[in-house]
Image (cartoon, rainbow, N blue to C red; front, side):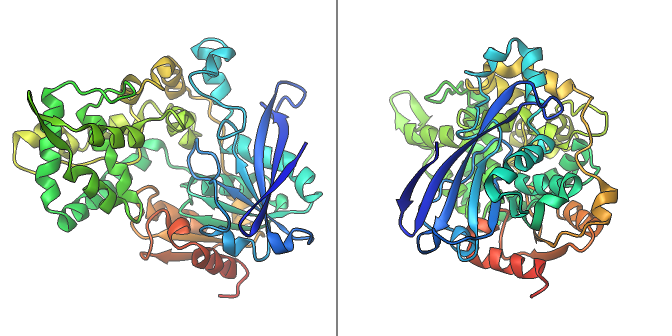
Length: 433
């Protein structure tokens, strides 16, 4: 049963679908997908084309907009929008420490989670499209990992697409995760350097916090063990437009005086917990490196192994000298599953996924080279999360793809730039710009 309701300027309708867990076994186990339909209030009765939004991640449900926020207002001028919670996220059949034991032990859980990559998400979209559009192709907007899914869509089911728009999400078609992280760590170092130029007072603040964590055991209110490596991972903020400012405000009041001496304040620890906990999106940690796996090689904790090639990120070595502490970026490590209580029960499952070698190809270079779907992509200059060179190489490999390369926005440009970014990309895809 569908339920419709209103917010300012929009009509919302909840939809639930069932799709095969394994699309190679369509008569086997089924899982549920949730999606929210959004239409402008004054167009609710009109026959409009559809735009499907694929959220970044992996592991995050679609944005919960209020009214016509961000890019949604521009989309609603001409589309009926479907905000899909990809499998395992949001209101779709969840995958977390509470539900995964229902699958069985770690091996069964890993086999289950191997079906939560872009290839399965695309087949989910094609399974529900006839029910939503009556069989008509739809426009897809893919943000970040949603862009990876969109390139997989162009590779496997282009007949389902009227137009494709990608923001910050052109994947390398053939890079191993090691290649991804070897390109990432220097970018992160540049972002950290830029942060310290903007906020030089943060150099000493970050060193002081790191030194405290090396000499004290600190546990966040939810039971998360705050190690120095976990603290460094707060550098993930630096990939968003306001992230440097948010990191600065976080660092400026970290300590409080107590009877036992200086300690990290409750207010600081509460904020850090919200930033580091995977309780709301455990799938991100579980399959993060798997989204790159496709060449018969194990991902094998790539971010952790490659980090060893960049000793400047070693906090203990940094604090032995007088240099600035380097934060890290978007990466998942074995210690993440030791620190976070939402992930600890899934450590063995994560190890099995990291050792897996039977990843199937996600992209079809030959089909992409013959692409006929109008497609445009925003590529953010020196994007911290997705390598610009990888993006541009993929852009050249997709026939007819038009790029907008800009340093006006960071990776979250479709949120920060909202209607203007989507308007620009739709015009590019239609060859109107």
